[in-house]
Length: 400
Image (cartoon, rainbow, N blue to C red; front, side):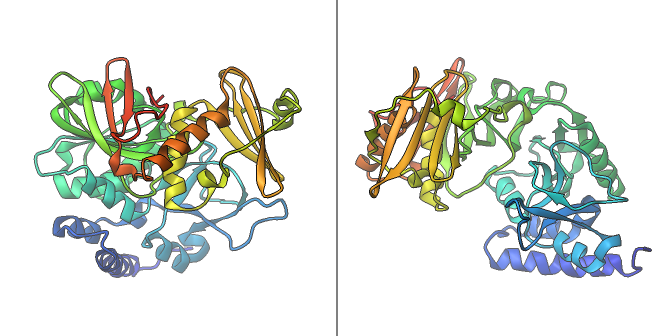
């Protein structure tokens, strides 16, 4: 298929409409950022991506349909200028966009983040002209282009762990006239050749704040990143780096999640039935419903992170109506089975996984259910601590 001759006209119209919608929704409040959104051609950065079908397949897996201009010009361009995350890669394998195929399931490993979240991250990082910025996770390059348009290419460095992803992003960036410093590098170690930075913003999540990021940030500089873990609990934090190299900041509100840095991804843990086979036959009565940390609510999203901080090596899965907790590091395990309106808990191993989570939930309730902004994270040489003034009994002496 030949690309329509009015592509750029169509794209400009859709960009303007997207900027207007983002402004009306409150996601775009700064005129300079709005001008960047109206100018950066997102479609150049997403020549191919996947969209979820309306229904799952017979095995309950999400069906992912490829979207390109050749397959369906209107659908592709409309999605490119929607406030939607566009998945561009699964399981680390680069798609063949010349002959794209439908996918069933899979773990997304690269994407173009929804524009409202990109703008929110840049805004929360408190960027200003003259700031030297490191972006961790170039992805498609769209967020990098927005930063270049806003700050100028010479002040932007962006790193990406996947060389194929970076090559594609670089082509799009340079083709649009943006010339940031780009490099294939692991975000866990920042990027020393361009340090020191006024701002570091990560478009992936980490189990812990990488120490290299603190040492590569100027005193008074800020680091914005998302913390996550093997329970898939998330929290964003904006840290300010002090003269002594420590950093401190509050957790931020909202339910934001990013793909994990690949080195921090959860390990496979095997068959839950094998773990459950070693648990004691006699259960105890659970004090809390596991739905408190699994429901699709903002409070559950926050609680899942607090629970994860207490059992950082635990993973959770549900088989039928039984909830399994597995810790591959210590060999601990637990199951929660619904019974007569409550839950029966069986657990064994060096760490009583659900008991620890219940202590977190008790402390949280006693403190009046404080939101994320009430928690402070302090990072220093050798560890990091999550603090709350009304939760001294909270078993979170070290985050990860």
